[in-house]
Length: 477
Image (cartoon, rainbow, N blue to C red):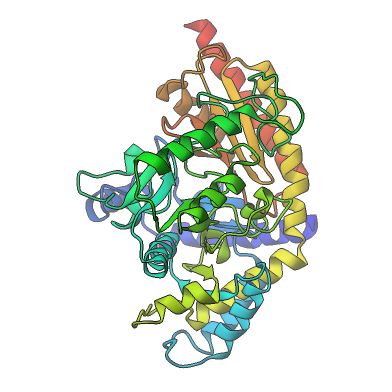
């Protein structure tokens, strides 16, 4: 493996030298981006990265500098950058058939949906393929309303379900909201956040690392869960009609900084929703495909079976594809009239998606997510004990959040300029992390699932060094 990596690295370096000779200079790239790309497309870091190549868990910039990718293209590169099995499958299909319409049959769509459906429990066996997570959640909303003949949907505050005009009603993070109507028929409810919310204790969440909050709950009892369920009931009683279309939730909130709910919350909430005639939608855009380690799907960690499951990002390892999986009954309601997606399920997407599923199984990536993710989570938890500015470390598998605070007593978010400096220091030492949370106060660690224990140790060392630099700056000032 080590030899293969270095051979690949040598080849990539020679390609990058050729790229440097042929491509625009960095400053011209930056100028073009500012002039010809939408200003809404922000860039990370003071000096934006110009990336040229990737290999598994590594990214390389235009100068050949290597970075350990802990963000995976916003939790999208599931099996590794340019994974050889996925790349080979895509190259083969490129020479055979790029695109036709799903009004015709082609082998790859039937083969893929059968393989995908086999990974879901009954009765979730009907697949509708789309191009993005926003599209998938948009369709799930549409299905819920058509099937139930009801309109109102409930979502969590802090949830992210897409940026389309329809899904923005379900996305409850202020920085994504624009000054146009977008929430008609969408009602948010209190987020059961056991770290930052009003209730939480030391045994609430399905994680090896719990909050620093204490509680006196007896075994099998969770007072925080009971309080949050009462808030959910209050939303049902006061904010929506007696009959609703449904409820959508991420098994673990992603953009909001890896927020985990009390263990029993989703099971009890699903029951309450179904009593109102609604369907339950699990948004697996970030949690699916083995990332949580213990299970293939995030909803399985809660002991529930949703009525609709949406998935994207890791489904295609960076190829634009997504899916909605539901029951035959709900799917049939959509067939009352024509509903069509031009690119959904095209030959390229299906071949790539199939190769991703094969790579997850053949490379034991769910198992790797559990083992390496557990190690990394515990290493970051050690740093929480050492540094006052780490308020919470949480997560499951290779989905980890590190919430930064001014101090553990107040839990006020760490100021943006301090967050950014730690983030920049990590990048300068060769580690790329994401950012999230309502206040952008949480580092998001969600690497390609091929990451090794050695990589995880390196990441923890770099983060430790960045925190030490922050401490030194604080003392100096």
